[in-house]
Length: 407
Image (tube, rainbow, N blue to C red; front, side, top):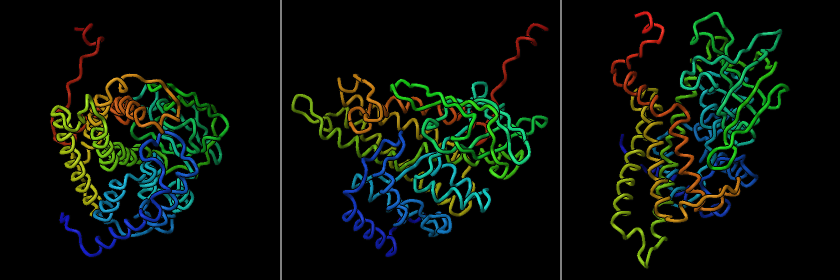
């Protein structure tokens, strides 16, 4: 693609810079995003949507800005916000995963009901996918939903459910057709987390905070109209959502911002009178990471271009989750090394820790370890890349113990 800025893009660049001068002081602190948005964040998100700096290509009828997708528009906006160290808006599971899913396969009523409140941050979603017995094998989900009159009645359990302890809604993968093969028997439901019969039990992570949850369903009634695409179509819908989840986890904009934060850290931290940025061992690692982030931004632009053209990216899209989490971990690793003793000590301060820069890097470091497992573990991602993307033979299965005994 041609990355030369046209007069249209230069005008947008000037417009965004003027917005930053006028409203920049209203921006929340960049980063974080692991708690329910506060009033300041919601006001900022609303302002971004109104000006087209968030939900830019979401149709106006559904609450977005409603312009045609333009990759360079997005690049110009992201670059200006990164340079100004401003918050670029919410990128949670509802906005980044459910909204594009509904735009692709949701009903008109579902789009009108949920997209607007979701992109403004007024409705927070969680993802009901993983189960204790079906983590990597998502299609083996056993949570049941049985049609009873005009409702589905849900029973079962989900685990590792991010944000469930403060989410308003859940998009749930459950089994509605138990007599069909596992991939064909799933459905995708939208349900309120306030529905009677739902129990959420937070799981404390090594950050000392409750970020994941167990969720139990006991005779939870969900209106049948809240199914997406139809009965038995859940595996298809779930994979649309997973496609967007991987892009969210490996988002180039977040990695670019973290690189800028890392540069500032190395410039402002000194040991025995020498800035870390002037020390060869730190500078060398930083330059390598800078090159990787630039390459990742270019790759992201390529994916956005292909998506705008309706082209399937194949293996180029498959590498995003694996590559993005590995790069994020290397960025936070360098930051923790640069912090020295401050990078080793950690005491959980709850959500208040988001406001402390040193503690935020520590949280990022531990959170990045988890991201290499969550959203489909990186080992599974490598199998997907090799088998589905590169056409390599499937990994051989180990003979079962029963078969060995019969031998």
